[in-house]
Amino acid sequence: MGKRCTVSHMVAPYLADEMNELMYPAVNLAMSTLRLIDHDIADDIPPVFDVLSTPASEEMTAEVDGATEWLAVAADEILLAALGRTIARTIGEGVVAVDVTGEARWLLHAIPLTCATAQQVSPTEMLGDVHRMFVAGPPQGTLLQSETFVNYVGTVPDGTQPTYETPPGLGYALELRVYRTDGLLHLDWWFDANRFDRYTVEELSEQFPLALYEMTSDAAAPV
Image (tube, rainbow, N blue to C red):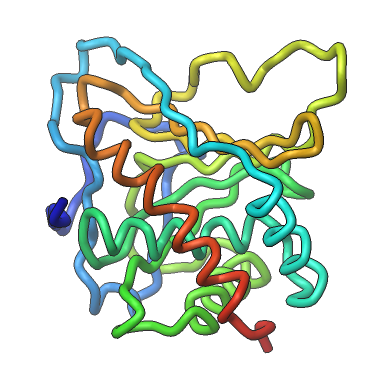
């Protein structure tokens, strides 16, 4: 399936909450701001959430665990770099506002995620860019809002409330929810079916492991 490219210099104003606002650095504005959603909807239309999952596997879990150790970065940084590559392959190149929480980041951490192909940006550069964003904190520049949320839940102990099965409640059009259970890393793609066509999210979920293996295998440690 060919990638769909939708770019804009503004994002939808349906989220006005302060925690979803993002300050973009001027350097990233050389790339167009990328919209991921397939459809804009009116503010008064409630979301209809659906979920697709990237199949859990021992291989994917081992790749992430090994890479966090030898690259000396957090798992969510590797996942974000892979998400940027996945979006570039399936939707288009540009910069996407992403809110992130998890690991030691219990407050939402907003970053401008570069979405670029291997011809544009190497795996080392992708990972390094994400790593520096987290170290530096939210960049200063032009105010934009996030439609996408990466939620690293972490390990879910046996017998706990399965919050990973709960539909999103923060209003994002797309939430990539990552958690561990039974020793495996699970990735669930929650999306608003009013704003996303199902096949778009299917393509993201199918391409993500390939981008993840690229980051874990080919990226060098950020400097």
